Image (cartoon, rainbow, N blue to C red; front, side, top):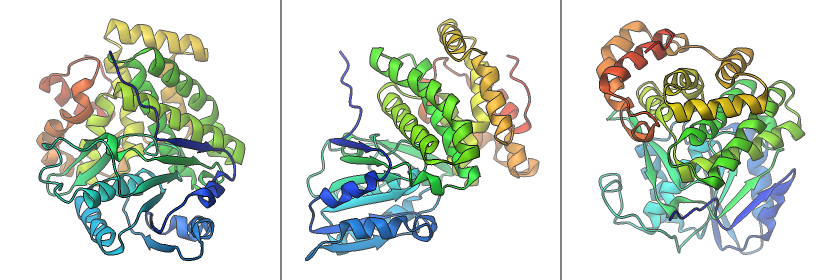
Length: 380
């Protein structure tokens, strides 16, 4: 028996779907966003406009970084406690949405904190707040998942908190919003979504539903991502926006794999963008995981579907979109890497690596980390 949950109560999609905010009833709404991009592009103004009603209170809280930290979340919780919202509207990439999820959780359940969130039985529902997620990037699918990834700076790692109470109630996928994305962000977040779909599709806990969802997401992203990144038109951006959401529906029910375990190790230590590290690591993981007969068969199925070798295709897309082929090319020096090597290896063994289709030994991980950093071919 398996219980599946694909989204919250509503999924609103399409150009200009941001206007759905007009229909939501509330008394006190807090808007959570990242740096200044959503403000500069006028998206926050639109959100505030659609929420504005006589007698209703609105508060804007901004400044969430690209890898939300425990400090940022706790600072946000203070704002929640002061303002006492009954509506949370998270606008932006996966980072502000993930941060807002934990803020809302800690606000409603004050007994929870970062010291016990991984040991307590987390609640399944929220009662104080309705949560609306409006993604600006087409990658994390945080708008439909029960997962929040937070950076623990003191430990140099990113960790995933999972609870049904973290899943947003309403997800709004408006293709106009990702039209504001700069090229590099569109690329990195798009490959993040492709990673989600590919890791889901080879996960051993895949079921009939997540198989179809992830397979469709793979096909859709491979077709539309290059067009979306290079043209940036509303139609292609909406397509990728939808397919990345499907990828999230899949992986939040089936799981991920080694890409995310390794990515969280590098991202947590060096504050690298999550989509960027995923994009770099993905081809190496595919070369490694194809040793598994079942995974190899699934890759062959995908290859037939797209008309070319899936692993070669992923490498071609990365190159075509201008992504670096190894971590060293991101500017992390060899001196830094060698000093942090053992920490990176140990942290890469955690998280989603645990559910990788091939159980990875510490010896193999040491080799994989070297390959990912230096750009060496996986030959073991």
